Length: 547
Image (cartoon, rainbow, N blue to C red):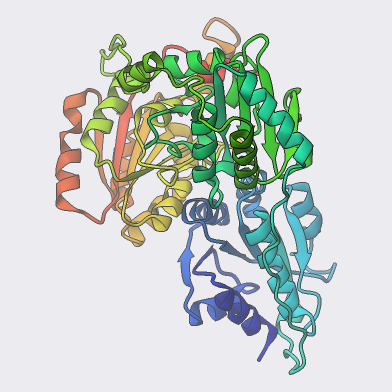
């Protein structure tokens, strides 16, 4: 057996089910080896799209996804998606061929680029170590929730695997437990709080974390919020208050800002989640729980930092709290607060003045009507841009696997590929993608992928014919905006050229064909070119547009 075939065999045995990529000469053989052993290969039209699909698939499936790349240019084409995954601690294995001869046109420092992107850089060092190298890289993805770039030198992959090749398994390492003195201090802070709020981030989506947090919140009298990436985690909990931060509804923002104890569980407590600190009231105590000790206090000072897994810390704290105070506390969970949560928590319960007119639809009106039309079993993905809050706030999601938010790098153009990866991870749900016109055109190559794979993707283009974030940041009365404003284009017609069903929407009545598309159970994507109003900058970007 050659090394390249052994790589496919090892990864298949470890449970890899999905591989994304663009195949070239360097990754041809190990990609085929994976497919021969049962993995599904999803061929993208660009490596950047493949990287984002793999990232989204891993987030929404809970599996390690593999990204297969050609050496050199294939690898660099994927870098933006790799950076997004690395920043998000996505369990993504980037399996890339590597040119090791400086005379090769494809020769670059791939390991150095991986490290600069925030990923772990590893290499298949020799035929003797190949099996161990692959298993180690996979284990780092699975157990450490890291993005790993595994370089496979072209000459090594074409060598024979020796019969006595090294073999090793890498078992799960238990997550750290917080120090008893830190748990005791945490219990003191909970007991002295009247209005505690827990904010769960990415760490809240790990195994057992949700249930452990709900138990601690019940014992503490805490309300349960999330960061954007964990949206939907507490949908079924009557004391869940949805997303904290730029996408907060007025009620959510009020409840978080009035808290006297804010606890981030696997949550960065960054400018987005805390609105540059505006959601932390004067005198409120702040606690942060994280697996990464360097993350604690990185974005703001905290009164207490606990190094540990979310579930582990929550369980230990619940036990200590109940030992000190046997009955559950009321805390923030009063009848009055509960009534307000039921009546006015979500954006679709908040009144607004519809400004649609002159051939342009208010993006709030558009989003509310889509929320009404679409089935509840959906998975919503978004691109970056001035528009992104509308689908993020107004389109309900069923749970934490219903919202895919590839925004750690804040790159425009990832939305369409994000939606494809999410759709493949959750095939029983309607995949919905919210994009701006700029992001749609940046990622349009993957529209052909959606058509070819017969994925019934609903693409909603919030089309204002400009890079809205830049236009509103610099203002209509400032310098020339010619570089960021474009002629209106018929994106529906372009989408039909790719083989999609498509409509142009200027008012809610124009959405009628969506009902027909849904009822027909079509396997063709539907693209909505919505001509939206964009008279002012979105408040979520106004607060944060200082880079």
